[in-house]
Image 1 (tube, each protein chain N blue to C red):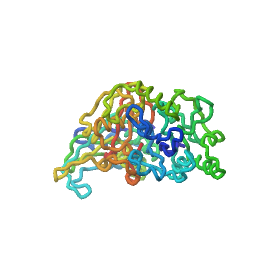
Image 2 (image 1 turned 90 degrees about the horizontal axis):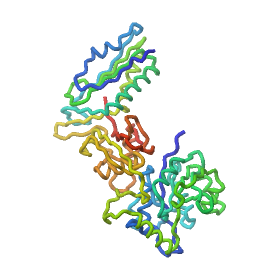
Image 3 (image 1 turned 30 degrees about the horizontal axis):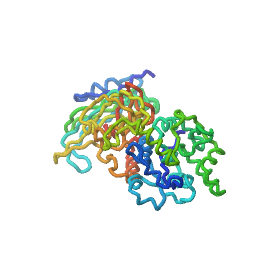
Image 4 (image 1 turned 45 degrees about the vertical axis):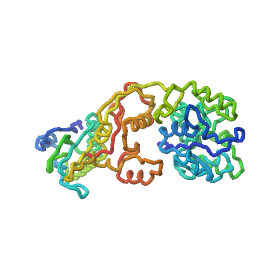
Length: 297
Length: 167
């Protein structure tokens, strides 16, 4: 049985009581937390949404993304997760809090690669207390029943929910990846750390700039283009160095770099002359081909 | 059963008589073939000529897989498929499928299976050149990414209905 398709959800609904401001709009290295989270997650999932309260629908930062309205806005993160699972009950959901400034692509990839879709959820063990971290975790369709049961008993803590459910628990490859920011002091410290880690770049850098601040290893790959994509790319082959870890991320990068108009959901991918998986890791020296819809015969 | 299947790509005119000879087998009483020809119209537009382009290495692999599947499924003795690449004029032979089997039923069924699977699975693309000067890649014209962040569900459903392979 193959795993249900994976969608992404970035939670922004919460009010930051301690910081007295909207966490989604906190900026690091010129990007809002919301944009950073969406840039990280979008290439790794089939579709990506922002969880919003109805009173946040007019916020332009949120409105530029697909949104899922949190119908139970007083329940905190549980309300947002509940709304997503109700809207698309047959999808797995990679749920992310937007206030994780140190989160990197490798952490998300590791989670996806170790996803146990037959269980209720796949989550990381907290570096602090060993408990499941619900706000960088994959909730499977079957978690909806567990969430409904919890809400019926007025239990709104997603961490407690995971702690008593059948959850695949993983150790964090990077123990600081899920450190969050709750105070002005923590924000200032995180800003300084991330500004220092970001290579000097013009502030108008396109979104193709690497979303991850922890530098991913560069791979040297060859890309071959056929048919409509060959015409759009203006070449039949190219070699490039990329931080993309999967064909999906590589296509995302090339779409921008080469102005490719075909949406990835219409394409298949081949790696080293065989049909491949959009989410399988790329290796140095791989040859990748993105296949437009075929029309032989 | 010896593996005598053969899928091939050709940039010159196909020779059905030669291709047919590969399928002759004393155990076979039936031979069925399908020829796909270049037609002068598609979806109401007048077509002047076609161009086929193939991802050779993978096309040969996937083509061979389809032939082997047909052989297993229908118990046919031999199966072959030859596909053109390059520029083709109206009326030219674009694809040939041939099957030999002990009896006609399996031969017809396998032939149909092969051409249907080839059209959907083998990485070969077709560009049509129209009388009005326009041209287009068949099946690719409605696949553009949605420019805004709008909901793309209807597009995805339409795509699924056409049977393309998604990720």
